[in-house]
Length: 298
Image (cartoon, rainbow, N blue to C red; front, side, top):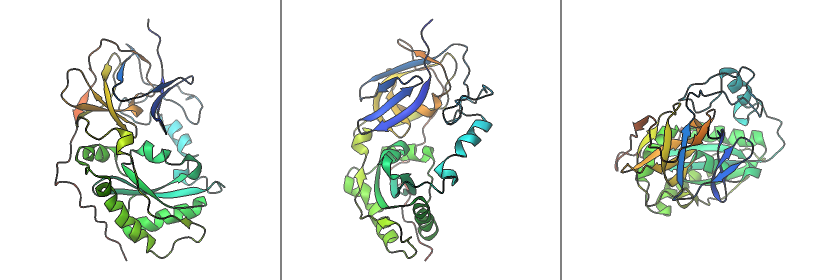
């Protein structure tokens, strides 16, 4: 029987995307690389635990879950996160950013400064700009200011991000235009925390990093993995947790959310056809994008 591996997830660095495996092994992903694996026959998807600890229940989790955690482990994992506001005394500096994912899709968020732009790569931000740097609670108050005054959300569903990738503007200037306008509006607001050091508008574009320019449009997305199922295709792009794969028998790319891999035992899939459930990807057509205008409350 072939050796089985468990995937810990996709990580981003300055060199691009890397698949990380339990035990510390890394698989560097490059465009044109053939990605092929199968789910072990008779396998079940197990909870990955929380904060480096195994799930005490060894619970089985749904195949369609992107978290791969049981209810108890998910609660423990979130209880020690910045998103849950349980680390208010964190002394590290944080940065506030505006991230653009496509026309009409801008979000505000924060990330610990030492991570640099990695958080933006993990989210699949097509382009972004920093707003400022300061203590955690000052960064959080700035985030809340933009949500309240400019109606900028702090979350955008991954399904929406995927749907708009095929209709991104061709030029970096076009992709940054909406960010520039919103950054200017944010700079004019009253109520910025004094302890937050503001930053000028300097857009960073990720289309080249993600490999999205000139690649086959995505036509489907993997809905779930199944025991005995296989995935095989040429890697043409990646954004956030998503790999864009072109199967040998397909005309377009299929998006694989790598968060679906965690919790499964995976084995080599050489010679196998793409035989996991794939749902049609609902893409936005030209002219159907959101206008991108986000009116302020005052």
